[in-house]
Image (cartoon, rainbow, N blue to C red; front, side):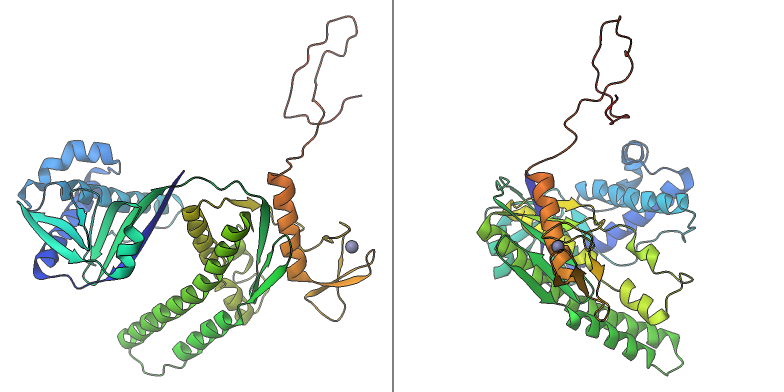
Length: 388
Ligand SMILES: [Zn+2]
């Protein structure tokens, strides 16, 4: 199994790199123009028809292919948006960057990048990047005027799981259920970070759209960084527990959650804002890439009924009359936390689904009920019922 991730570090591009980035972005914009004129989004067709259009640009020749592929990527995103009924403005690359999977080398603590005819630029890698690169194969790099990302790949052997960790993501906590214990990570801090940012942005009184936009962007970026950092702590802890106990990680397959909280669905605007800023996917993304890198399997289960069935007896349980987050099981006579119940149920679902796969043990048959004719057995997935 191949695991892929990227390492990012800060750096300041010199004038040579800035020039290469500028030419690279000009090439992308040239290609976007050609693609729009001729209505082409396929990379193969594009490079066959227009590769020589880029002859005039004085740049390392392999970057031309990368520029074409970037232009095709942008054009195909536009095409997909248009299919959905969104009419986007003409695409245009404004921010400088350089992306390539060709010609670069890593020599110890340096990344060597070709910038022209037998001309190279060396970028010093910091300690963090250098340690991450050991034992992994660098595949591509992305440079912007103030950052460098290197995409790395590693061959990993998937761990044979011995137990399951079920994860339930909620607005105010993340609960995990392992074989022996249930752990709840509080995430109220994330909510307060988001709420604070919203209030600060709303408090701007100056009637200048450009200034307002500038501050909104700056605060938004800061908010995203703080949220990401807190989620990194949680995901790191979960993955390290999974490595220690050789466990499989099981998550709910959450889909279409944003459609539930739209204007006109009968919820208040504060409630909608809270639910729509819930970063459930970011945690999933972090857990997925971190565990893939270590060979820990990640599986998804259907979120249906995870907080409605008792994890002890399996009966349907009711919401508590006085606590909205507590559930009462009449059979076991127990008051249980809704999130703990969900995490345990997810863990059980993963355990029964991926460790002891269960299904109907009968073979489905159709036709040939006449006793005189020979019986032909055939499995038919469309009719999974026992015929009498
Ligand atoms: Zn029960």
